[in-house]
Figure 1 (spheres, helix red, strand yellow):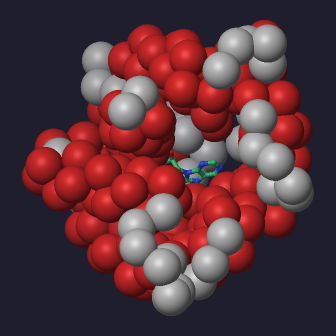
Figure 2: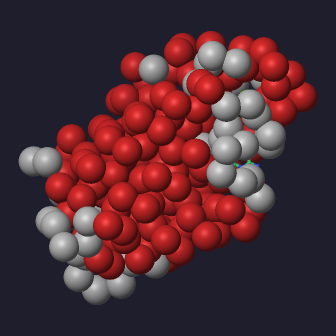
Figure 3: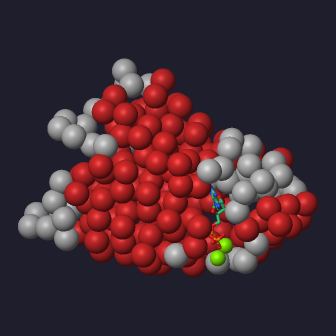
Length: 205
Ligand code: ADP
Ligand code: MG
Ligand code: MG
């Protein structure tokens, strides 16, 4: 962050970037099954820009807003704009002390903005199929501490991302060659699960 050392947001975004870098090829392969194969590359470009942008800001809200804008600019593609909104709107929704409850509120708002932009429905085999179980699980654990609530939500996202292998794409580039994607997880749902799992590891201390 701006004047100070590494904030929690800095550490979370950096851990997320590492996890995405480790999985860049796999995300590209998943995206190449029924689409254009650029999801791994887009995600590493986006996350590098997000980490750099957050470093120049102070406070979690400002850091996430800057990270989201930078991510969208650098990543490009459908998922670039969508992840950009998710990050930025989570930041915009954070005010005052951050607890599991206020974080759940911010994530609710971000997911609303995400669906308003992407217009995917649950079951369309998109990121939303991992994001929505994450959101809902966070919401049911608002009485826990943040690390605990976040990790349970990340576990739900991971299971849900794996289960997208059984779905048929109804939105995005992959919808045109939908049958090909049978048996393969959605790339965006997979990257989302990787991101939130990496962040959970940071929050766990
Ligand atoms: P592009 O399709 O522009 O090449 P990416 O390959 O980076 O973008 O991202 C593809 C992912 O974006 C998909 O796997 C899916 O999860 C997500 N996605 C695409 N369109 C939508 C949408 N309308 N709503 C939600 N998620 C979407
Ligand atoms: Mg793609
Ligand atoms: Mg593309």
